[in-house]
Image (cartoon, rainbow over the protein chains, first blue to last red):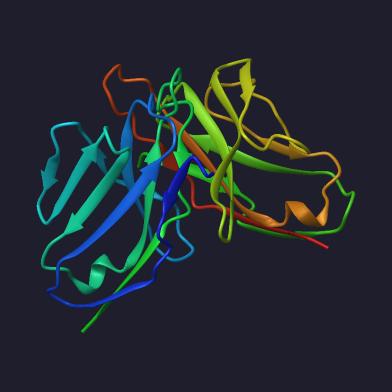
Length: 113
Length: 115
């Protein structure tokens, strides 16, 4: 079983729609959680950290469910510029997220006009 | 401008010919890492470094070497490249802020093809 699993998609949704992704992780002692965004053939960039209480950044909301070992990302009022691959990232126990992070293989999102 | 740079950006080589991919960051970060990205497998960590002269293996270190002689530089060395090392390589840097989340800053990537 992979340490971090994501639905690869692609998700193809119309502009303005709300879209949600889930990601599951296998190690219950994992410490910190993130969503990164990767545009085609570009480097990954941090989208947001995911906190236990849930957090929101504009149109983006991230949630963590430790009991079920999944994190989610909700994008409201999607824009064409949201088209990208979204990477779920987990820090394994015993490590700092500055040193070691585990990536999911990513979920592709395509927003159509 | 704060950034991580990698060179070369594209490289085609042949099996067995030693190569080095350079990585440099200008943010005075202590931590640096190398990843490879392959379709369906995502990004996997090759090696990381916590400071000068301190390095450790990631998840897929076989066939690679690294060194950290200066804080800003973290070169990736392939002593004898093989076709299964054809991949997209990313260097990243970070600093331990002490909080729950430390962002990793990635370079633009190096696309390597080994024939």
